[in-house]
Length: 116
Image 1 (cartoon, helix red, strand yellow):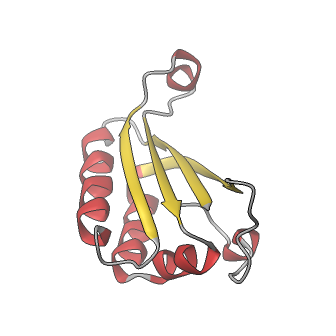
Image 2 (tube, one colour):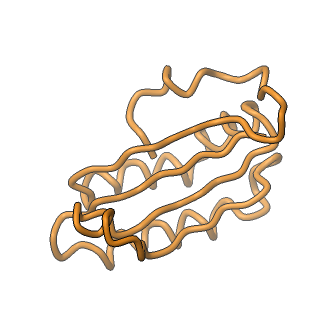
């Protein structure tokens, strides 16, 4: 399994626009991306992250890297990425394999460029 975590630091006053964008992404990909096991998101409650302005986070769980690649190229994700540039001052992602298996067969996430 591949886990994809993203944390977001919106521009001041754009927190609601960020929440709307993530909500729309989650609704659009639900059931539409084979191998997407779960996509959750929410407001950050961690004081150290909040002190740095990171107000929201998102977690995607994928069967393997091929499923992640399908999600990455999905039109809803591409629209989401374009919106992030408007609403976020910063964001970063962390991707890693879980469950003792290597998610063989997809593109290295480092080759994708910006996070989201």
